[in-house]
Image (cartoon, rainbow, N blue to C red; front, side, top):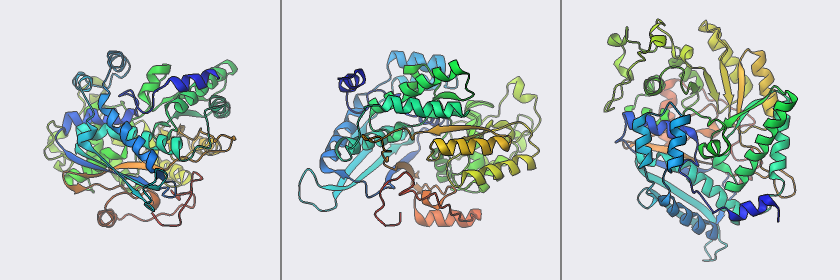
Length: 478
C-alpha cells in the first residue's frame, strides 16, 4: 500500500478538530459574541443537485458522525496557534472558544425521506438537516455538516473515485495556476470527499508552491480557508465574512435598505480598518450593496450626527468607530475606501469586473483594489478572469475547490449543497445574489425584498446550480 493510502487508512472518519472549518465561521462567531450573543436562529440545508441522493446506509453513517461532533473541543495547541497567528481575534473570543462545545443532540435535526421506501439499506432519498439555537452556539455547524454529508455520499453512493494520484493531480493543477501568475487559496472544505482527500490536495498544492518559488513563477498559493489545514501546513488561513452576517443582520433589523451598511459598520467596529477587509457584495444584489459601500463610515468626529438606521436594536455593544491614530488622520472615508477589495460569488464575473471598475472610478478611488473570485472556478476560468481583472487594474485572487478527480482521471462532480441561515429572531433570513439560481430562503420575503430594493433579475447561462459542476439534473426547477 502506498504511503498516502496507509495514511488515509489511519485517519478517523469524519471531523476531529474544531478548527476543521472555514476561517470566516470563526470571524463571524467573534463578531456575534461581541454584539449579538443571544440571537436565536435557524439554518436550512439545500441540495442543489437533487438527483445526487444518499442511501439509507449513508444517512445512518452521517447521523453517527454528527453525534460525534459533541466530542470535539479546542486543544491547547490550537488555542496557541490562534493566539499567535490570528491577531484579529479578541482575547475574550479566544477564551470563549477554548471552552466552546458543539451540542448536536440539542441543535441538529436530521431526517431521511426515501424516494421509494422498501426498508432496504440501499434505498435512496433526500436528507433533511435543520439547525436551531443561539447564533453564537450554532454558527460552527455549517462546514462540518456539509463536509460530512459530502463524505457520506462519496463513501457509500458515488464510489467511482479513489485517493490514488490526488496529490499529483493537485500538484499539476497548482503548477498551471502558478505558472500563469494566478494567486489562489484552497476553499475545498465543504464539498470534499473526505479529510484525507483535502489533505492530499493541500500536499500537492504545497509542492507546486515550492516548485513555483524555484522557477520564479509569478503566481502564489496564498493559503487555505480551512484553519486546521492552515495550522498543519503553516500557511495563512484565508477568509473574511460570509453571506450569513448580512442575512442575519437584515433579518434582525427587518431593514433591507440599510442592512448592507449596518453589516459593514459592525464588522469594522469589531475588527477595525484594514483588517479582514474583503467585502462580500452579492447577498442582496451587488447594485444594492454598492449604494452602502459608497457611504461614509462614522468617525469620532461625525458619529454624534449619524443615521440611527445603522444601529442594531438589542446589540450589547455599539459599533464604535476606529480611534487609532491612523484612522483618525483620515477625514470621512467611505467603506469602499476602507475595504481592500471585494469578493465575487455569483453572476457573470466578467460583467462584475466592469461594474466594479465603473464604481471605483465613479467614487474617485484610484488605489488598486482586490477582487476575490470564488464561484465554481477551474483553471481555465481563473486564467480568463485574471487577465480581465488585471487589465481593469484590479488585483485578482481566487478561492478554488475544483481539484478532485474521479478514479479514472475524469472530473468527479461534487455535491452542490449549502446550509444557509433561514431565520433570526423568528424572522425569515434570505439571500438574493446576482444569480437567480442562488436565491435562498422564504419566497415571499425574497420577492418583497427584491421589490423594496428595486432588484433587477439577471440571467447567466453558466449559472445553472444543478449542472454547472457537471452534476446530474432531475429536470426540476430549484
